[in-house]
Image (cartoon, rainbow, N blue to C red):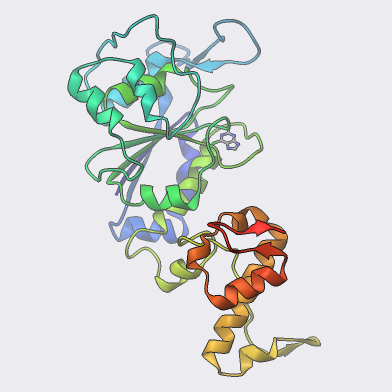
Length: 306
Ligand code: 6GU
């Protein structure tokens, strides 16, 4: 997997050379390059931002600098997008909204590719990702999908954001463009968000983790995502606190059931939204009994609070 990151603080990404991602780079699993956006400026001040059109506070990242950079990294020739001016620009930053590509009408083939953009990236098509606090949340499912791509390009915005025409233009060029937020809070720039997304994506690459099974069992993975059960190691009695007896019983079926029930109870308490999203047809008899005891109706497609 080839990963390009564009930022005005490329040094921030030196941390990626540490730990597991550093090892993955050494093994040749991933090749990460952090670029400085200012390398694509031509003015003496190396400016990358300007005041917002329509007024308002803060600064917005200029499209011209980004396009010179992205054209080079994506091996694209600059073009002019011609579109029906009666159609307003896409004002939402919705990663799944491939229809926004329809507002622009470039060469027929490019429109087609953009309109057919699936959620699973075609491995031969680069994916351009913009962290954006006003975009859909980045989830484990997104991480899984993106771990199948061959080339990821992250564009870190700073200041109040970036010109909305940048993602619009590259979508119209047939690039798989996505915008993601990592949570409901505001950061100063996309750098932290990119390192979060990168860690979630790259750890899923085959050969990245020592123990592949630990990926399968953890929270938020699989079709029926639950929070993970609690974990214990030895000693069985530590400072007066005992490990649950059943975990010492050696009865694997009982251990599995105990852990599953604990995962259901913990998820019920902390993330009832995840219980509501469960597919009832994938729950076994014991799951249903546990959920019913926790106050859920499990006869429909998804559990419903009684
Ligand atoms: Cl992706 N960017 C910024 N600047 N702030 C955020 C975010 C992203 N996700 C949550 N907050």
